[in-house]
Image (cartoon, rainbow, N blue to C red; front, side, top):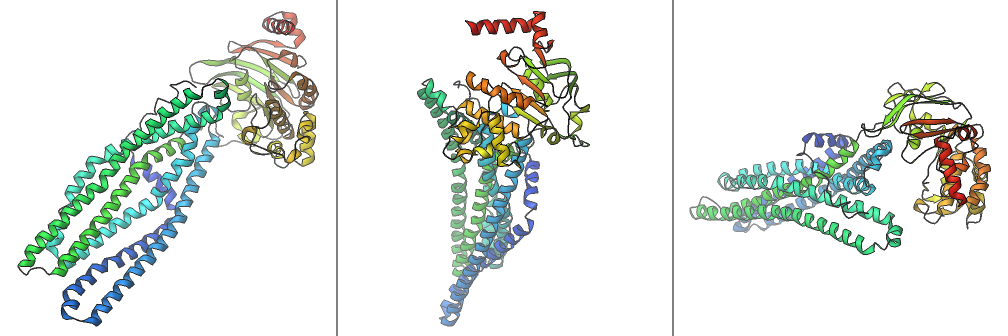
Length: 593
């Protein structure tokens, strides 16, 4: 891994678009009932708490001076009752919002994963997998609280402010105006910090994404790291990326930490002003001690929701960048989709036809130019040629992993762009050069090709492709657990399991893309009989660099320069003494030497 691979940060987004937040509201509307209930419970709890200063005022100005013990006891009981009721409402609200928050996490993650399943191969080729993973796991967790508790709390704290102001003015108008005088100062302070804070948290998002991507790749490539003794070099890159994360985090936290001290300072100054003006008026007999204490208490409660709104604002600023990333992923275009009127592809015979097909991955460099050929049902077609000539591109177009730029790909005379992808791919078996093994049992991995396959069919497929011997020698046989990516299996064993998985799906069209590249020569010879059994009665496309394995194919197509340079049987192409002849002769001479 090059040192510069993860140094470049992703570009910062455009200023936050409120439409993104409105779009997120779609997830909230599904739980509007529960959130309304939570809001009502919170409002009731807040109102109960607002009666306390009035009760204290009554105690200081009336009950205590009059020595009325019965009234004082009643006031204390009222104070306790309002406190317990407030606590009960807030507890019920918290339990309700836990359920809402977890449901929102589930919904967003479900939609995000479903979209990722539809994205083309190129999306995954262009991005480190760690950056994709952090969006599905970390970012969704982060924004869920913002979309549930955050929005509820904005409404709640705003209502609290309104209630507090009303109660304050009911107690005393002049001192209430002193409290409100601090609001313009706070507004100027919040406007100053807003943009700086958002950009700081966007930078944290970028740095974490880079670190996660490098960490994921380093774990996957741990063996290569040790083979080439790159431990110190990689540790240095990781330290640098970690330092960038730490530095970005500290910058963002510094802005965060300015919020509450700023609000607290304004609050202290306002309360000091209350006592100053209150005592001056108190000396003139215009105010009572109970009124000053009550207004001071309301002032403290007045700034509490403002501080809470400041914290919510912090949370929004922190998570808006994550929300942008999530929607950025969901908005990633699915380039290969079913047409609105796509039909189900019926049982196919396997006739494949390319009609004047041209294709480019980037819209600039043409990989295929006006390619035309026909494969009849049951024919085996070998694709040979130099690396990057377009062999894998041809089979990817047959499977419709990409859309052709020009021309048509037909199966049994039907344009595959007019049928559903599922009905097409369910009748195809594709063996890749780099087989992928899922965590689970060997039986589950083979059955992945067809979920309703019986254990008898699984065992028969394994025997056909010469996988049964090593599977049955494993401790639990077909029930043996394999780790992620088949870590405890050899590359050859993984490829044999993939062969069995493909065979058990019983495809009408079979594609073998360098499928025997990781199998030793002795096993490959034994496997040839199984491969021939797989090819029998199926239209097949075989990509192979070992030309000795494809001499028996019905047709060999030499792919280069964006098209088919030669086409024919092995004997016909050897007789022509063209590109295939030169390639085959050079390879045989290399093996002989």
